[in-house]
Image 1 (tube, helix red, strand yellow):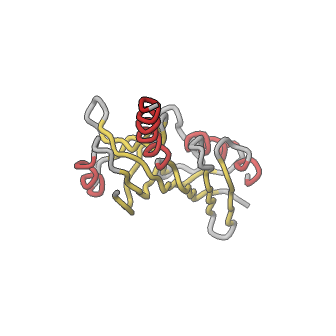
Image 2 (cartoon, helix red, strand yellow):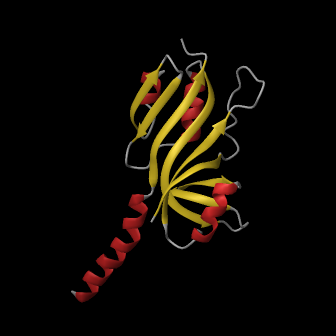
Image 3 (spheres, chains in turn red, cyan):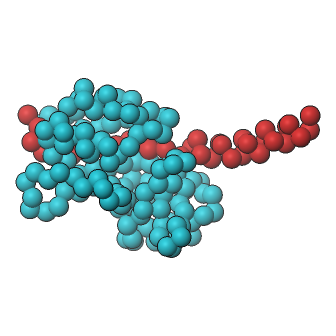
Length: 34
Length: 134
């Protein structure tokens, strides 16, 4: 049981920072648009 | 173009301003958006991208060649072009800190009227502003 909790905790530590990382917004200036 | 971009992978919403020639894209949170693919999609819809800016959150890492990169998802990172702002990020490399930056990923070469973006080479991120360091 303790092993499962420890593994879940370690998994959380690994996944949480990655889930924060992402592209939030993209803006493009374009030419030739009518 | 709005519909075409809206169908691309990882795109949540697209807003096009005809007056100032700007296209704003809000990505989905699944991290599947691919900026080089968007450049190509815009070109395929018949217009030319003059500039592409991104706001991104990620970790600063140093690759095996010693270059700084921003890791924005487990399988996506952008090499950082050296400038004054990038020097501020150097101490954060590989220390698990998360930064939010605004940067330029693409700029059309000067003097060319309509250019197909070169998506074969990796896009480099020119840091314009560091918005947050955690």
